[in-house]
Length: 149
Picture 1 (cartoon, one colour):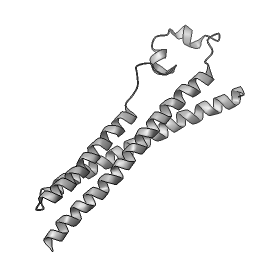
Picture 2 (picture 1 turned 135 degrees about the vertical axis):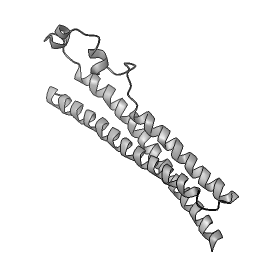
Picture 3 (picture 1 turned 90 degrees about the vertical axis):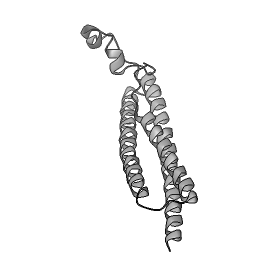
Picture 4 (picture 1 turned 30 degrees about the vertical axis):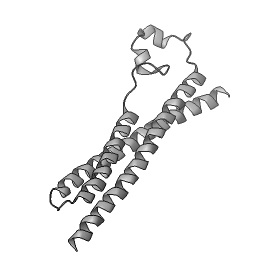
């Protein structure tokens, strides 16, 4: 790969991490709103054992999805990836500005790609759980409506 291609790949991977973090944050807000709405609604309706079991499974799925989303957006400051502000914090201004210190873009692209894939996998799992939770909560609502009719 040429330097221009590496620079473009580096920018693309960084942008993908940002997009994944944004999607995770929006989905986390949605999950929180659904959890709040569901728990407040559950206080106003008669709950039977089947409703509690199915609805409870849906709420557990939402909580696990929230945990996965928090893991996806959690900052990694252990220094697993090369570069970034954690590495810069250990350098002097002269070391950062030194023209002899060149970044290895290929290594950065690989490290950032691994971070992006890990975040994406967590996001996909969380989306799957939110969909499953939605189905379970819908079934619980149908059980409640069926009992009310």
